[in-house]
Length: 539
Image (cartoon, rainbow, N blue to C red; front, side, top):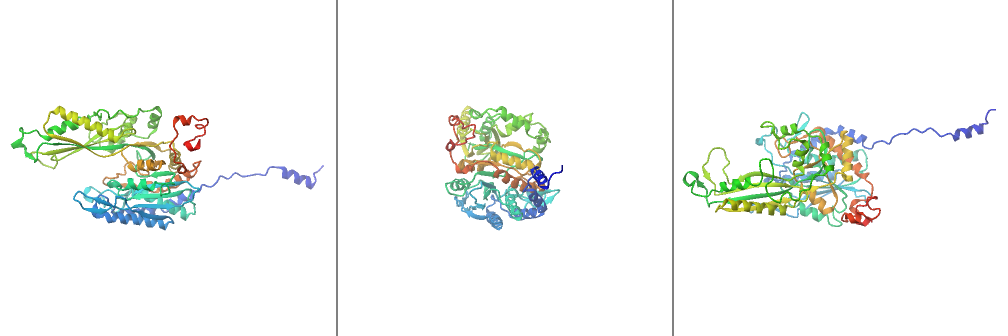
């Protein structure tokens, strides 16, 4: 018997309706296309920035630094942000001859102030190293020139290109009507290449309660480089530094070696063995006490090094060693990288007062000063290292039984910085790099020092991420500095994706709690470890 209309209707309505599963649209799909479409515009803007000769080491170019800071400030406000110039607390730069010139201010910018959103602060610098065509540049260093997809110009990769990428990212979000997933704060300086005078004081002042850096949850710095040319990386460690000079004075004036040679105790004859006593030709540090605080390598650490994309042969080529002897100090990738990054080193840099010009000069210098430095690793204290070095040199000088005058002077020092590559800030960056490049970034440390990373982390207790966007062959500080065009464009993509990944980090704003990390005893409170507690106020 056939069903009635009402029965048929009831039967149909009881069936589960067909539903098509449509994946949510990636909010950054159009963003990536937009960045590619406008790539020529970004290159032209970088050309304008490079043309501003903001060389912090050239006193007569100090107005150019002010010009560069104001040029960038105008872009921030043009894109809807707020910006101001924070007076440098050190006010003036004083030179040896007593002359003074004003120190440039620090540029502070902000996009968004939603208390419900996390806040990312980006650091960069807008000053550059000196550069002249006569130094060996193939092009005018202050006229950005594109050759075979490479953008040659001073500051292109260090650090104008990366620093300005954040602004182009914000502009693209505005044009596409994509809301910023986090608040952005900007702190750009103009003296990084000449000692960052005033930045330490600025960071400490702005980190006080209620001030500019107090509500920052994560920091991001793009002022270093990949380990290689093709695989991006995230950097979680930097070595510190202790710089020294050891001097020997044998007379009040230079002497003619033909007239006085063999009759006086020569300073160079004392200085050479003193410097040779510091380190041997295999790189082994010979100063007692330097290695005592160096942590042993863990098994987990070894695994990080095993995964890194690195070629010893390419490295020998890159350093110029291959053209001489092709022999490096270490024969394995892991050993070489560890000695570049996680072990201390001692390098001899030069001798002031000794004859070094072309030709021959038969002089006995009245005073010679040897320059050397140590790169330090976590747990090493520059002050304690200075004590070890001074004690060593005094002991070695005593062995020479020389009547000459010897002294040791410690110059600037900085502690090493080490972060946690598993921190959510790093996880966000890893996901962003994977999205843009289609490969997992290497986790690297660096042998150099970036003091601002330590200053920011110490002052705010917030995590600092080093997110390099340039390749190892960008030649920062050298002739023919460049930024690969593809990396310049991908940088804008990575930074945008990174902010979206940061916004997904669960939990409250890290800046809401300034507690010291819990001790092991506090972590043993029932449930503390399992629930992921990170500070005392959450117990």
